[in-house]
Image 1 (cartoon, rainbow, N blue to C red):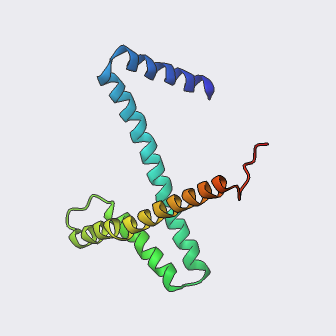
Image 2: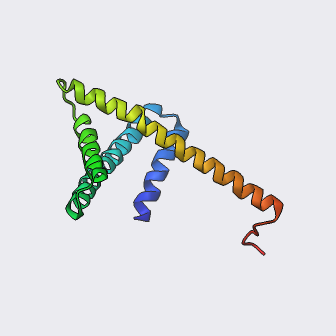
Image 3: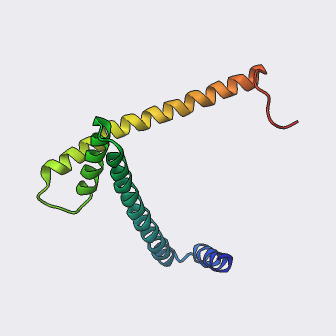
Length: 130
């Protein structure tokens, strides 16, 4: 795999250095669309399989909530024109709970970074290099 990787690296670098912006954009979009499509398909399969395994083990309200959310997001991702309620609900899910979860993750990362820095500066935590 290293020869095709190096060849594509040299091709993209040559297009970038040569100033061929249009060709560089075509190569970039071609690769990105293929990778994004493959990852989206993999994510959809993993989410559906996870919902199946979760509901097969035991039906709980959190499992039902997860399954309904997965189905809502997958149906809302379809290019349907008459699904106004589903699309509005999908937009709400992405704007309210998802952004709140992302904010919580970022706050947790920031707090952990500050705490780790303070512990290193005060000498309570040793680095692993000696």
